Length: 340
Image (cartoon, rainbow, N blue to C red):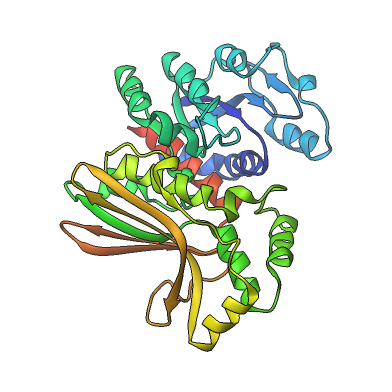
């Protein structure tokens, strides 16, 4: 089967997805009988391009890398993101616009529009999952389409698909995790003698922290990931504002040194547990002893430990992820969506 793809958002993750699609093109055809053409790409700063016959993805990647606008490749003009989705004629939308912690917009409207038009949707955007997951899943079902979001938590690690496909009738009771790789890297570097500010600047330099790092260091990114996992895997809607949230700003070099002397480490720990028909979620720094599997999780590595009613504890670890692993999660969602 041939599928027309549209990419809304073409930052680090979007470009890695483009490169991965090119690299996997022959394998997709040979193994899964899937062929594709990219008919639309929309960026936040380089404009939009729609070409029903298919864009030359290699040339588009080169142009974006050179700082050029995308309109040069377009045969169909579009006025905004919604208009881009409507005019793209795509079968699959990859929605990777910036996350909005408070409302999930405009990504919610992007995904709703695509589903209403009969597209499958894959996203790395956590906002729509925590603010509109039940409504969007119902809409997808009514249209005979899929709304997948593997890359929203722990990049491309198979968390949502694990419970969706491999753990039928396993009820998730609670989980404990390190989900924000930026804060984990900051704390690891502070253990090696850097100040908080120095560690933050390094995280910004390598591109895993934003110019305004508050989403990471104040615990918002971790809180929205707790909300996403709880909403989907426990089927109980949870908003980030409902998570008991404490960031790492108050962790000083002296506190790091004192913990190290005791054979312990500070980690920003995420927890959630069922309490009747509700979920109690929390993100806060904790002292972790050497006996904990969380103690050895360094740098940008993430870990989540699930407790179910059937399997006991099940742990997933993702080592040093990046935009390429997030892109893989999107590719996996595309394959799983069209095969379903």
